[in-house]
Image (cartoon, rainbow, N blue to C red; front, side, top):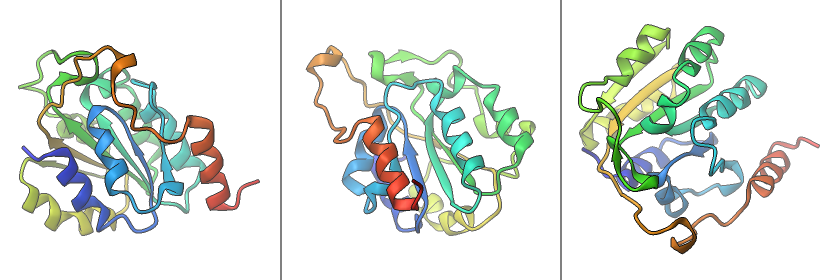
Amino acid sequence: MIESKEVFEAFQAHRGNAIVSVQGTSGKHWADVTTNQNRDISLGGAMGQSTAAIFGLALGLPNEKVVHFDTEGALLMNLGVLASIAGKKPTNFVHFLLDNGCYATTGGQPVPNSEDIDYSVIAAGSGYAATYNFDDLEELSTSLDEIMNQDGPVFIAIKVPAEVENLPIGMRERRVTRNREQTISDLRSELGIS
Protein backbone atom coordinates (compact mmCIF):
# COMPACT_ATOMS: atom_id res chain seq x y z
CA MET A 1 0.00 0.00 0.00
CA ILE A 2 1.02 3.59 -0.59
CA GLU A 3 0.10 6.49 1.68
CA SER A 4 -2.24 8.89 -0.13
CA LYS A 5 -0.03 11.90 0.57
CA GLU A 6 2.93 10.04 -0.97
CA VAL A 7 0.85 9.37 -4.10
CA PHE A 8 0.13 13.09 -4.42
CA GLU A 9 3.76 14.07 -3.76
CA ALA A 10 4.98 11.66 -6.45
CA PHE A 11 2.32 12.85 -8.89
CA GLN A 12 3.02 16.58 -8.29
CA ALA A 13 6.51 16.21 -9.79
CA HIS A 14 4.85 15.08 -13.06
CA ARG A 15 1.73 17.23 -12.99
CA GLY A 16 2.95 19.86 -15.40
CA ASN A 17 0.05 22.18 -16.14
CA ALA A 18 -2.70 19.56 -15.72
CA ILE A 19 -6.13 20.36 -14.33
CA VAL A 20 -6.56 18.15 -11.24
CA SER A 21 -9.68 16.97 -9.43
CA VAL A 22 -9.44 15.07 -6.15
CA GLN A 23 -12.27 13.08 -4.54
CA GLY A 24 -12.71 11.39 -1.17
CA THR A 25 -11.20 11.45 2.30
CA SER A 26 -7.67 10.79 0.99
CA GLY A 27 -7.99 13.87 -1.19
CA LYS A 28 -7.53 16.17 1.80
CA HIS A 29 -3.77 15.75 1.36
CA TRP A 30 -3.79 17.32 -2.10
CA ALA A 31 -4.19 20.81 -0.60
CA ASP A 32 -0.80 20.36 1.11
CA VAL A 33 0.92 19.32 -2.13
CA THR A 34 -0.59 21.30 -5.01
CA THR A 35 1.39 24.16 -6.47
CA ASN A 36 -1.33 25.50 -8.78
CA GLN A 37 -4.63 25.79 -6.92
CA ASN A 38 -6.22 27.69 -9.84
CA ARG A 39 -6.02 24.47 -11.86
CA ASP A 40 -7.55 22.35 -9.08
CA ILE A 41 -11.23 21.44 -9.26
CA SER A 42 -13.08 20.65 -6.03
CA LEU A 43 -16.34 18.73 -6.31
CA GLY A 44 -16.75 17.84 -2.65
CA GLY A 45 -20.07 16.20 -1.92
CA ALA A 46 -20.38 14.82 -5.46
CA MET A 47 -19.69 11.19 -4.53
CA GLY A 48 -20.63 8.99 -7.45
CA GLN A 49 -20.88 11.94 -9.85
CA SER A 50 -17.43 13.53 -9.87
CA THR A 51 -15.96 11.14 -12.45
CA ALA A 52 -18.70 11.97 -14.97
CA ALA A 53 -18.25 15.70 -14.32
CA ILE A 54 -14.47 15.62 -14.76
CA PHE A 55 -14.82 13.40 -17.84
CA GLY A 56 -17.10 16.10 -19.26
CA LEU A 57 -14.45 18.70 -18.46
CA ALA A 58 -11.85 16.63 -20.35
CA LEU A 59 -14.15 16.45 -23.37
CA GLY A 60 -14.81 20.19 -23.22
CA LEU A 61 -11.12 21.08 -22.90
CA PRO A 62 -9.40 18.65 -25.32
CA ASN A 63 -6.17 20.68 -25.34
CA GLU A 64 -5.75 20.47 -21.54
CA LYS A 65 -4.48 17.44 -19.61
CA VAL A 66 -7.23 16.56 -17.10
CA VAL A 67 -6.43 14.31 -14.12
CA HIS A 68 -9.03 12.86 -11.76
CA PHE A 69 -8.21 11.19 -8.44
CA ASP A 70 -11.25 9.01 -7.79
CA THR A 71 -12.17 6.56 -5.01
CA GLU A 72 -13.50 3.05 -5.43
CA GLY A 73 -16.59 3.76 -3.34
CA ALA A 74 -17.52 6.73 -5.53
CA LEU A 75 -16.70 4.89 -8.77
CA LEU A 76 -18.90 1.93 -7.80
CA MET A 77 -21.87 4.30 -7.54
CA ASN A 78 -21.54 5.05 -11.27
CA LEU A 79 -19.46 2.22 -12.71
CA GLY A 80 -21.01 2.68 -16.15
CA VAL A 81 -19.02 5.89 -16.54
CA LEU A 82 -15.98 3.75 -17.41
CA ALA A 83 -17.70 2.58 -20.61
CA SER A 84 -18.66 6.16 -21.48
CA ILE A 85 -15.10 7.39 -20.95
CA ALA A 86 -13.61 4.55 -22.97
CA GLY A 87 -16.16 5.05 -25.73
CA LYS A 88 -15.35 8.75 -26.17
CA LYS A 89 -11.59 8.12 -25.93
CA PRO A 90 -10.48 11.43 -24.40
CA THR A 91 -6.74 11.34 -25.05
CA ASN A 92 -6.21 14.05 -22.40
CA PHE A 93 -7.85 12.14 -19.50
CA VAL A 94 -5.87 10.44 -16.71
CA HIS A 95 -8.00 8.59 -14.13
CA PHE A 96 -6.39 7.60 -10.84
CA LEU A 97 -8.31 5.42 -8.37
CA LEU A 98 -7.29 5.53 -4.70
CA ASP A 99 -8.62 2.22 -3.36
CA ASN A 100 -8.79 1.96 0.43
CA GLY A 101 -11.37 -0.85 0.57
CA CYS A 102 -13.94 1.12 2.55
CA TYR A 103 -16.26 4.12 2.65
CA ALA A 104 -13.90 6.19 4.81
CA THR A 105 -15.95 9.40 4.66
CA THR A 106 -19.02 7.75 6.20
CA GLY A 107 -17.32 5.76 8.96
CA GLY A 108 -15.31 2.98 7.34
CA GLN A 109 -17.97 0.56 6.14
CA PRO A 110 -16.30 -2.03 3.88
CA VAL A 111 -16.76 -1.78 0.13
CA PRO A 112 -18.45 -5.03 -0.97
CA ASN A 113 -16.01 -7.62 -2.32
CA SER A 114 -13.16 -5.10 -2.03
CA GLU A 115 -10.45 -7.77 -1.72
CA ASP A 116 -11.30 -9.36 -5.08
CA ILE A 117 -12.14 -6.43 -7.36
CA ASP A 118 -9.47 -5.42 -9.87
CA TYR A 119 -10.58 -2.02 -11.12
CA SER A 120 -7.85 -1.81 -13.74
CA VAL A 121 -9.23 -4.99 -15.32
CA ILE A 122 -12.69 -3.41 -15.41
CA ALA A 123 -11.25 -0.26 -17.01
CA ALA A 124 -9.26 -2.31 -19.54
CA GLY A 125 -12.35 -4.37 -20.37
CA SER A 126 -14.28 -1.13 -20.85
CA GLY A 127 -11.73 0.00 -23.43
CA TYR A 128 -9.33 2.38 -21.67
CA ALA A 129 -6.17 2.92 -23.75
CA ALA A 130 -3.89 1.88 -20.86
CA THR A 131 -4.34 0.63 -17.30
CA TYR A 132 -2.02 0.18 -14.31
CA ASN A 133 -2.07 -1.25 -10.78
CA PHE A 134 0.29 -0.06 -8.05
CA ASP A 135 0.90 -0.85 -4.40
CA ASP A 136 4.56 0.21 -4.33
CA LEU A 137 5.61 3.88 -4.24
CA GLU A 138 8.87 3.45 -6.15
CA GLU A 139 7.15 1.56 -8.96
CA LEU A 140 4.48 4.27 -9.18
CA SER A 141 7.05 7.07 -9.09
CA THR A 142 9.11 5.60 -11.91
CA SER A 143 5.99 5.06 -14.06
CA LEU A 144 4.41 8.51 -13.71
CA ASP A 145 6.32 10.12 -16.57
CA GLU A 146 5.08 7.40 -18.94
CA ILE A 147 1.54 7.64 -17.55
CA MET A 148 1.31 11.40 -17.94
CA ASN A 149 2.80 11.44 -21.46
CA GLN A 150 0.68 8.83 -23.20
CA ASP A 151 -2.64 9.19 -24.92
CA GLY A 152 -5.58 8.39 -22.71
CA PRO A 153 -7.84 7.55 -21.34
CA VAL A 154 -5.42 6.07 -18.82
CA PHE A 155 -6.54 4.32 -15.62
CA ILE A 156 -4.30 3.85 -12.57
CA ALA A 157 -5.50 1.83 -9.57
CA ILE A 158 -3.54 2.40 -6.36
CA LYS A 159 -4.03 0.62 -3.03
CA VAL A 160 -3.95 3.11 -0.14
CA PRO A 161 -4.62 2.71 3.59
CA ALA A 162 -8.00 3.89 4.86
CA GLU A 163 -8.22 7.21 6.69
CA VAL A 164 -11.61 6.71 8.32
CA GLU A 165 -13.65 9.72 9.43
CA ASN A 166 -15.80 8.94 12.47
CA LEU A 167 -16.68 12.40 13.73
CA PRO A 168 -20.04 13.83 12.63
CA ILE A 169 -19.53 15.85 9.45
CA GLY A 170 -20.17 19.18 11.19
CA MET A 171 -17.38 18.47 13.70
CA ARG A 172 -14.68 17.51 11.18
CA GLU A 173 -11.77 19.74 10.28
CA ARG A 174 -12.68 21.69 7.14
CA ARG A 175 -9.80 21.70 4.68
CA VAL A 176 -11.56 23.05 1.61
CA THR A 177 -10.67 26.72 1.20
CA ARG A 178 -12.78 27.44 -1.88
CA ASN A 179 -16.36 26.47 -2.65
CA ARG A 180 -17.39 24.86 -5.93
CA GLU A 181 -18.38 28.18 -7.54
CA GLN A 182 -15.04 29.79 -6.62
CA THR A 183 -13.16 26.76 -7.92
CA ILE A 184 -14.92 26.99 -11.29
CA SER A 185 -14.45 30.76 -11.45
CA ASP A 186 -10.72 30.43 -10.71
CA LEU A 187 -10.28 27.76 -13.39
CA ARG A 188 -12.16 29.83 -15.97
CA SER A 189 -9.91 32.81 -15.22
CA GLU A 190 -6.82 30.61 -15.41
CA LEU A 191 -7.89 29.31 -18.83
CA GLY A 192 -9.05 32.70 -20.12
CA ILE A 193 -12.68 31.58 -20.47
CA SER A 194 -15.19 34.40 -19.99
